[in-house]
Image (cartoon, rainbow, N blue to C red; front, side, top):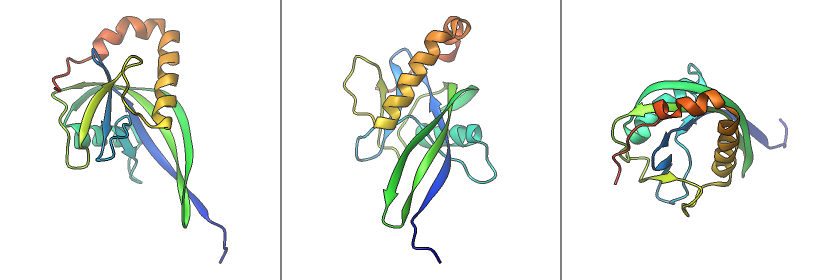
Length: 153
């Protein structure tokens, strides 16, 4: 048996849900906001994991998805090793009213103008999304179709 710590590589589906108010972000009791999503179960794709987590975390119904890029997160060290998220980032069109769940305590909308505290990984993912969006002339014209009218107060 080795004394080396093992880093678990977690497959994660990460959703970008852009609304008129900004990008939907969620937080637990710590108020460190992240994009919705989560680890994929063995039988799930990362897109399926993101869809499941969106429903669990916000109650929103996913209408359409598009994989837009991959992102490798930081190594999160623990006493016995740690984990590293390997994100598939998915642009999502959803409908319904976003409502915090048992695991999620807060829902907000991030934009470059507001001061919401987001994780460093989330900050990098959103920055990469904004850069991706600028290069997507076709998608820029269609983004109106990916937005839903948020009803969170």
